[in-house]
Length: 89
Image (cartoon, rainbow, N blue to C red; front, side):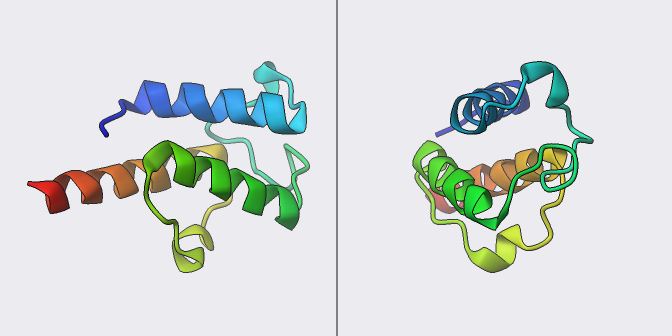
C-alpha cells in the first residue's frame, strides 16, 4: 500500500477527531500528543491499533517510543510503508 504524506496526515487527523474528539484545528505536525492533544498511554495504544490497520504492518513498541508529535506519527507511518515497498520489490 502506498499513501502520500498528505493522505497519511488526512487519515491521522480523521482518527484523532473521530476517536478522541480532538478539534481538527488543534491537529498540526507540531502538536504534542500528550500535552497539546491530551492523549494518554491507552489512547496511544488505540491509535497504534488504527495505524496498524491502515498500514497492514505491525508497529513495534520500540518504533513508537520516540513519537511525541503528530509529525512524528506521520514519519513513523511513512517509514513503515517505505519498508513495506522496499521489502516487496
